Image (cartoon, rainbow, N blue to C red; front, side, top):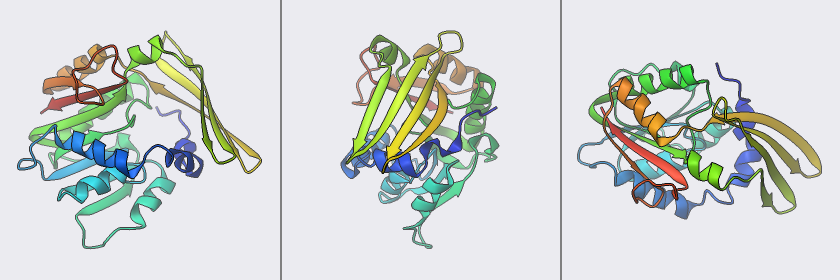
Length: 242
């Protein structure tokens, strides 16, 4: 079951994320994603947890047919606001657990920590539905925080500013269940808003084991700079083929 508030990535978060999810960063990340597959083979992409559509739109501009899904209505409304009705780009507000695609996409991407918001059984079930959604020989690309790096360099408090507004995270890692628990405070125009959420931080070995059990093959790990995955990697990017 999902215990997270789906408003955790609502208007307030979007305002702060614009500070660091820049167009230049999105362009670089689309380059990285493209490097993991052959454009001559991949034509259709599912962007799982697309947010406001920055990666979906970037990949679409390169000629791919892209479907973006996110559970947050505010983010999806923003993503849809600039859509051309004749484009090969679509967005849908949907809970990931209700994915029902059958061999529809050449690639599925879960980018920038869009995975891990459910319990272990539900997360595993989601990976199975992703496998079902991918065509034979298709690819799944998962971008997730490197748990070992986070724990080695753990920061209990994270703070982000936007003019005089503040987003502050109080974080605690539970070694018993593997979840990172976060209490997020927004202080915007003198008003306070508090949201609690958690995310399962999987190790590389755990994720690879889950993907192998489901039926993925040729599983490879890299980092945010396309180097081999290591303890020093801030991000864990896993590429798996069906």
